[in-house]
Length: 272
Length: 305
Image (tube, rainbow over all chains, first blue to last red; front, side, top):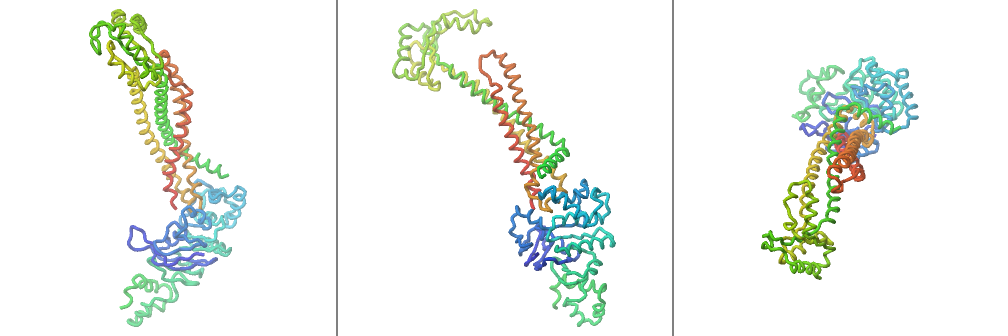
């Protein structure tokens, strides 16, 4: 479904690559969290999947298309198979809920009849059945995000990309959005979600890919926001050299946060 | 459905920056009017050339008793000298080039002179004797006057051989300069028009960048995205070029036919409305093509995926 082979992405202004030889495969129907600090390369990853950027090196396959060689004329048709949701919703303020969702279908040339049928269906699915005539500014944040999700999935995409969809929402509303995304995933859509929300990731127990400084440091089935196992070698070395530090490794969640992150940032220093 | 949607986009784009659209209309209007005037002027020159070159003659002026220039020495050209010129014109060397010729006597020259300068005090001073007798030669090909000038001007009793096209060429060069000036102004204005259209389209795209972003995200094809913008530019330019066409027809109808024809009293033919109607489609096509090209270039950077 999505496959990265040794993908690096450098932006011309900075020396450090946004992604550094990333290789990963995401299968059909998976629900994947992409976690990592700001600037760790999550957004670059999503932009590469969307073909908003092309990789500096390495190859990317999405939905059977090799994105490196996909001609820019074919990119729009490729994107019709992807849905995207953002933290800031990106709704059109001068269109009501129905028209915001219908706009997607209009610009890819769907018939009026199809739009009249598909849009109420998808609004019902996201729980906005009675609000099709509202304007975005009349809706709460959660409702606006539901409109954005409706817009992303109305064309029944194979992949849904979500860039911090709960970033602007309170926990209760976020839970509602996650239930919705889960339901979409159960329908067979692959969901790839970048997030900072530890609570959500821990609760959902789905595949977690963690990026640090453009490198994948963790790819865990049924993982949490922070890892339970401690896979980094340096900690073990530290354990041996300093017996005191073993105390922290026994504490599972919060205390280990700082400890296990440090080594991945500077892996070259590890062997001494 | 899609056509309606695109038209709706065009309409909202035009409404959103009315002032820019009006300036595009005005600039294309003025620039294309200059283009039209330049084309009409070239047509006028062509027509005048056709008309006058047929009538232009080579005049062989013979000596009078007062002339000292040419081959004259204050002696009237003798009958023998006149006959020699006539023989020369009839000779096998010149005959193939000459269509016809006439001999103008002192009396005829005087009469023509009096007609021409009837309102001028100069008419009172001349006498028939001071006006040259002349041969008026019509050539088969007016451009071959040099042959005649060379072979005749050396003959005794000939004061001067003159190709009347020389006078016309001066008029034509003045008209030519005027039409080149018009073209120069038109080119400058067209450059301004093209840049203005590009700016207008950029502004329009900028004010709709949210929609454009979403369109690109959900996979609207490039053609679908750019068509409304190109149509917007074409629409504004179309109005401008139609106005320019009307202006050109108006100029020909009211200024050339209405005023100039009366003022010049049909001494020459002037361009008519039928000529103007040839120019109008040229202007419209030019306006549309320029607008489409510049709008297409302006919007292309919003299409990079």
